[in-house]
Length: 88
Image (cartoon, rainbow, N blue to C red; front, side, top):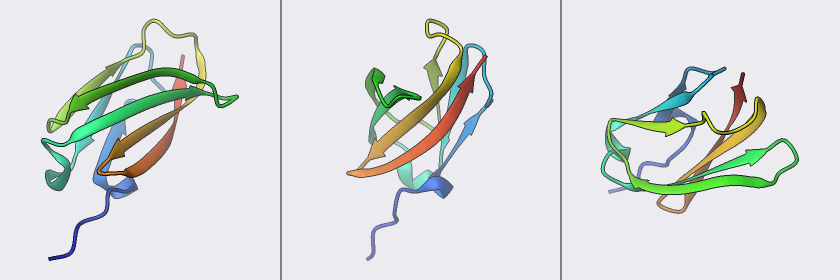
């Protein structure tokens, strides 16, 4: 049995741009997994990091960070997906 890779097709992130929070929708194979989520600013500095058990839908709160462009990195099973996020 081959392992299904965690990649850009494994989740949806919305709304983007966002004002307060992001919803992460994980596909079936990536529900109930340990996810490490890091947020980086445009200069590559780590702003926040959190770890949680994935659900079908998980929420990331961004209300306390400044408006701008960020990169959201989600790591599951030592595989990473990075998405550009706009906070306004």
